[in-house]
Image: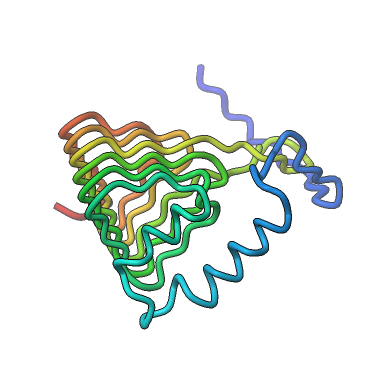
Length: 182
């Protein structure tokens, strides 16, 4: 017989949130310097795309050769970013990397895509962090407005289609399409 009990709602107490166990990876001064550079220079249309990889490297990212990063791309913590060679990151992509994001060579992250390594423990009142790394293997494509959630690996040559949400690992060569998209 099927369980027909309604789910029990969790009473939130966000005041009790501690962020216990989360380490930002750099001192506050470095974090502040990055946010200033990100918002005043890195995301701007007038800042040359060819200089963006060098700026990320200056803040601790590992970035390969011939990497194209368009304007309005946001990277939360550069020191938690590894990018291979010949990678394209499209306009307004957001790499919310509270944990490490690894992007293999020949990967395309299209416009407005979100790679989100952060989450919360939904069953706890204080909503503590439940983060996990993201890995995009060589040749993967995260299409426009697609989302890759924490803990997911997108396999070699796999595609997360436009507006799709990858909440589980995507096998090599697999295509994950948004509902209703062929």
